[in-house]
Image (cartoon, rainbow, N blue to C red):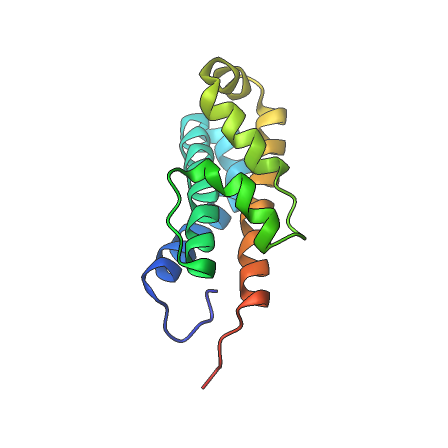
Length: 138
């Protein structure tokens, strides 16, 4: 999505969020050791971007607005059956159980596993969208 010549509004937002998510993950080990608060900030931004991004991609795919970011859980398998939605289910669980999210903040190894799976999920949804809706390079 980064290489598209011109991007529609939602594509531009998704591209920006994907870039920020990748950068956050790239520097995550550094922040884990040097600035844990920054790691948590980037982690939370990735959770928000991945969950919101799945809803945005569905809008691009079918033009339907969803009520919330987790309504994509039902719709994603219909449009992109190859995408594993379990990371999005985990994000929903964390957002609806703040005490569990707080516990995760205190467990850096587990946090990094969730961070990585969330970023991979975000990339997979975008990759599936691009595969299903290729754009002409002209």
